[in-house]
Image 1 (cartoon, rainbow, N blue to C red):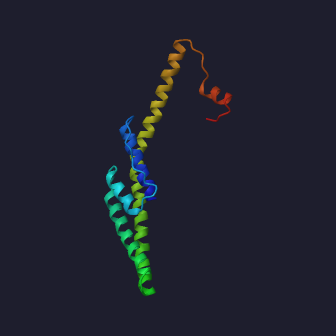
Image 2 (image 1 turned 90 degrees about the vertical axis):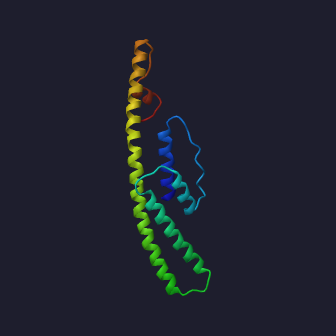
Image 3 (image 1 turned 45 degrees about the vertical axis):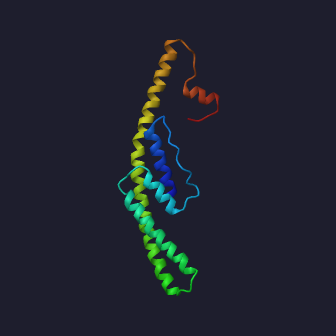
Length: 150
């Protein structure tokens, strides 16, 4: 989920840049720490800092548990740590969902603007074609001829 949130943030940056493009780093093989670092460089949204803080906390617990498994440790202590981790993971999941809502809420107006723009562009194009007496197929006829569905 964290990976998808970073990708959504990259997408939002691209939307805000318009026709200009920013080269985003490849995050396919990043661990949670690397994803947090990348999210720190992305767009700001209300729960971003809380999310990063919670992710660092849960990652620290995970690291502690993983290292404890390699040493002589009681299973009672590991169970206790695992419960703390699970509680933190649930909190992180809730914060992630909240963050997605915030990022997608910011992306939503672009979709609406894009829809309006496409319709205006289509109207302008058909008006120009009609004015110049250029024959063309409507979207529906073109789709039918091409065996596509709209």
